[in-house]
Image 1: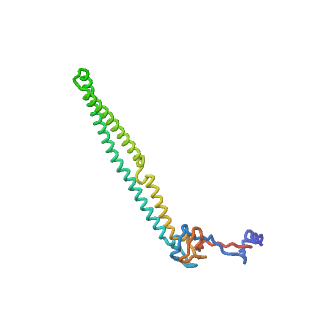
Image 2: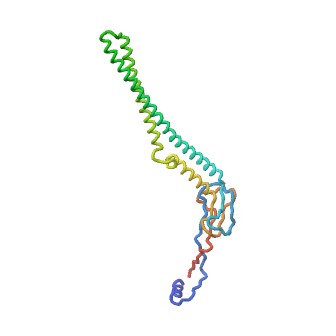
Image 3: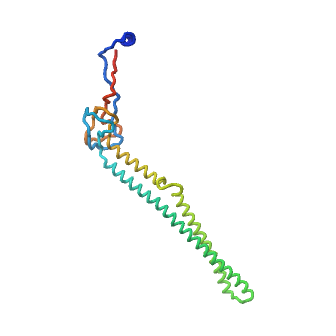
Length: 238
């Protein structure tokens, strides 16, 4: 029968008929991308729909909470980075203060050194008592310690500023890793929220609807099918 059908089409140009044929179409399955209770079913069996038409709405309470939490986390990340930027200015001011401390400590050390040298010169002639010389030596040692402390404080201020600047240098607020990560989590939460509205993937007719209000929709489990009305084809057996 098959060979005869091919022969008839190619060599006779006649129409071939058969009673063994069926109409087929590339059916689109409608499956949710997020899980949740079904809040609304907006279509009926055999109803014609356009691509993008909402078909089913899932309860979005949890998804909205996730969006709100992600928005709050993004706000916290942005405030944290702005705090780093404000800290940089404050640490720069501290660095200037530490430089001033070093300058004063060096001036005090120079005076102490001069006073000690003068008293040491006078001590040889007996013009300065031993107690005065000891006091001058102590003041010189204290001035040395004060300078060392001022220099250490400046080094700590430099380290604190450098550590802070690592967190903000070279990138804008939007590009900061913490802010970018928080924004990505917000984008993911908003995407999950948008997916609580299950839409028609193509134009067509609703078929094999198996979803009701209140049931638990699961990811990947079909809720219905959409059969294209214009792209059907005939599959015939001769």
